[in-house]
Image 1: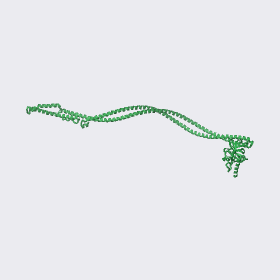
Image 2: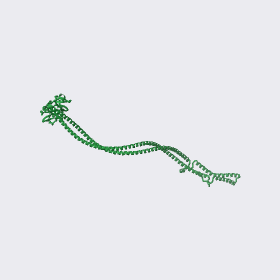
Image 3: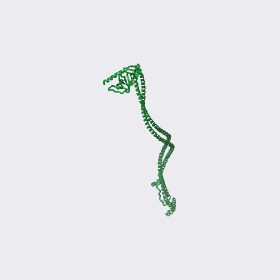
Image 4: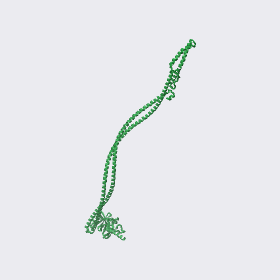
Length: 426
Length: 146
């Protein structure tokens, strides 16, 4: 049955009062003097009072002492020992206090356990956070370096794209010039084709004319042969005339001899013979001249015949060559027409190239713009990364601080002893 | 030489001009077929039929100059009162009167009687007598040999 301490004091005080009240009667039975009885009464009353007081205060004092020791132990951080108070017949507030302290100690153990585990986890998390932040920081630095490299690359890219843009602009101009030249080449190929056709027609016409000329040359050769035969006849006649002149000359000479032998009578005949001789001599010289001319004609005719034969051979060769030339012209015309077709195709393709080059110029301008934007963005990203890196440095510092605080909290919490099982359980 | 009746017959041997007095020649003729005589000298190509008489032919170029005769030449038949001999010359040019002789001089060449200048050219006037004597000597030598 629970009895508060105040009731116990009141009960003790009542017992002392009762003892004081009942002690004289008891002492009287002993038969002492009144003074003695009074003294004894006081003594008995005091003794009873002391005994009862000791009896009442001893458990209380013991419990208070246990509580004090427990509080001292708890104050030193030892939460391992529960307060064990023998349950009295009449439990009082010390028993309640012991129970409350035990409950408080239990709560403290639980709290310290939680703190311990939490600080451990916080420390571990801080360490992990610190390492993670370090890794992130390292990664961030790598990212920053990479972004810086990307930034430089973007700048280089922008520069290169600028150069490429210039080159592509120049190339576009060159492509346009090529297209223009290709059109001119196509036009020239058309003109060449027309010229080649004309040349082919002229070659065919020349071939026909040359064939006709060859026929005429052959006819000339035959006519020349006939002419030569007649010249031969004239030569024979001239030879005959020469022979007649020779014979006449001979007769004239002999006539002169006969006239001379006739003496004075033959003078006139000698004159006639001399004149005949002169005529024969002139005839002979003329005949010799004719023969000489005919010989020259013969020589020239032989050379002319050789020339005609050579010319005929040359013309035959030329005819074959002209046939080859005509065939070549035909092939040239085909080739030129093919070249014209290809030139037109090249011109069309060049026009497509020009259009494509214009689009490429537009695209490269867009790329250059994007590259410049990228360079600017990468610079911004680089700056942001540097800021992030600085923030990560701060975070590293903060995580170190947190780990330090967690360690300090752990050291603080470690001052509380809550027992192995409790620690393990926690 | 310049009496107005003398006439010369001019002919050529190897490009050189020669002359005979026309009274020493009876005929100028084309070379007829010749009949060679065995073992005769080279300047004696053969014998010809001259109007039914056998007349020896003398290659005058070979005889005087020592070179072979001109195949297309002509023959000068000498007067038979001098000798029955025909002279083979390269060609007979003409019969000229003696007035054409511009100048003349003696010559020390064999068988050359005089050296005449006709139309600014030298013409050798042959001494027919010496020539015939020498030919006859040769012909007699051939005949005695045979």
